[in-house]
Image (cartoon, rainbow, N blue to C red):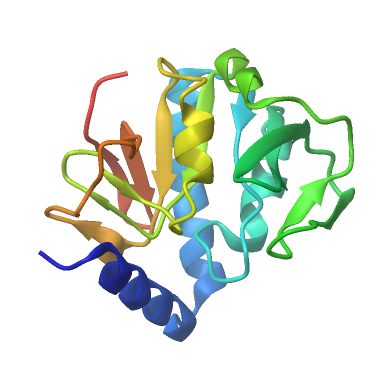
Length: 188
């Protein structure tokens, strides 16, 4: 089995080379919205995609247009995430990693327990729900506050693996959404 760092490097390289990303992201978001409609969430935790991440520029506007209250992470020093409500057009550059963040009041990660669904970034997922993140563990720590919420990873088709390396602290996902559809790994 490849190491986490090797899988991360391959995923990052493939994302950089991805052509027609806007069309691919639009398909992924269409599948995500269809799946979310079956869950009927009101409050959704999501992420602000970097240019190469699944969902791209279409994810957040689509979630807002559906009428969901969307919480986005705010990265703090020391590996902690706080959360704030997303308001379209009001994102600012984050202090860390240059990720766009909401400017509103900060809420601790315990707010995730009030979310109906948590949408996560990932560099890969496997058939058992193992999620491979960027490697800093921010989301794994935050997800400890939401053990019962449905967790959905957004990945590209080639980022779904038979198996991935994992560590005891890695938090699994229930579902992955790709441009080709929805893959369920664990019941909600």
